[in-house]
Image (cartoon, rainbow, N blue to C red; front, side, top):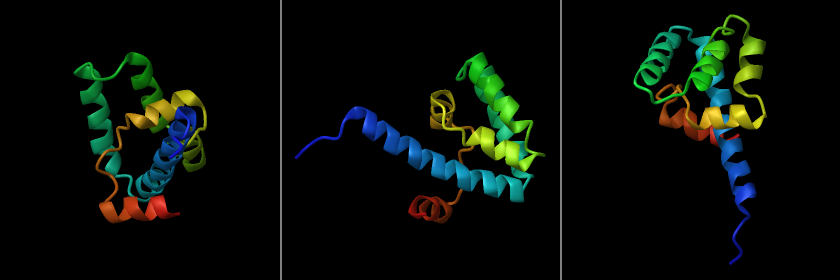
Length: 107
């Protein structure tokens, strides 16, 4: 059995996480009330030192663009390494149901 190179595995995981965030973005844009809990989670994580200032500011700047759906999605789904790492420690936990998660990963 051949093991996949670490970089390839990381890339595959990042793509799965990105697909989940695409579904999350669509759901948040359709249900803006979800943002209250997300913003609370961001503040709690930062205040409890579970998140560094740079990550906090990046999440904050992404959330501030929610009234511009194209910009919001572009920032949330950016392909750069920094944003991919940010998505790995998402503040959007609990937004998708298990069925929505499964559906997002099948697309």
